[in-house]
Image (cartoon, rainbow, N blue to C red):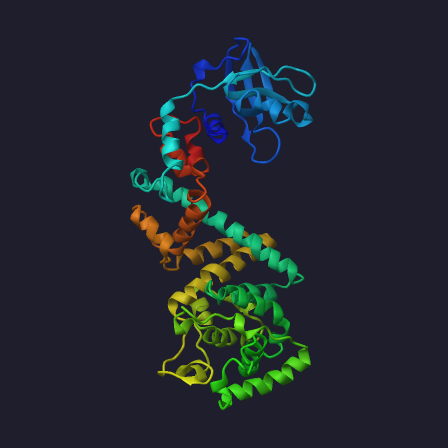
Length: 438
């Protein structure tokens, strides 16, 4: 038996209400189970019970065995003096609070099939434990849960964005630049791109917003990719030599320290995702007057945002993937899929975080609307959901499914998941069934 399962039974009143008697034989009627507490202190706050004709208001503590109250040190903790009821699976010992007062204890009786369903889920070998059952649920229930999860995911991302914001001295342009640059790494080069953004402040780039070549020289040079030992074939390449020459001037002016060029990864990458191509595309995005984030906020719709982020690498890269080696001529655009990845993982989270920070819910709503208009993502996680019969039409829902899989399914938080709660309790009437849908 797991304590979290007892929490679940108590929260949703999924127990035999007629069997609630304390150790002295007093009938207990639960008027309200209380508010679930995930932090330190009693498990449920502000519960109300009727016992021996008297109404009690206070907290409820839950354990597998009543003796755990003492072994956990609650008997000497003042935070537990207002516990009015001790709920357990096995009552093996009378317990007392820090004032020496006995706490009424009750053993929960429940339908064993509920625990069997719970064990079947948490012990399922598949990451999505309910993949064989979820399709049987009403789609209305699933969609309401996903609506909450997409907000939860953006809230988590907002926390990370605001951490960056704090580190920039509350500069939204700098914050946006760092977050956006990080996602140019496409996982393989995420860390080097993040290092690049930290090594080359946006305030320097902003001074050269009208000169893309200078921005390229700043980015390539600070990235360490102009180290003459890396691309020996490029030493006779005019574009490469001009970048080196420009960076020498700019690095001296701004006291820039180049990164080690060897940290960039090229192996096992499609050539269009080489860091050389991505850096040139990034320079195109940053070559705008007034700041990229300001323009992002001013964009009226998704189409305008796509125009902003649908950029191409400079002409040199039309027939190159690395410095000094010619290739088949093809324009190196960011591509529709890559552009939408930037929007989903960088642009929209920063817009949402900005709205939360400013207390402007309409901006947060705009971020959610943008997700609703972006194509659904295609990746291994979404393929898992498709196998389970779940297939949604926009990034709004695929983001929610990623959150559900990573934060609930993978961690076996079935009792925190509204889908898991519904599946386990199938056939039982919940006290507050509407809680599953809120």
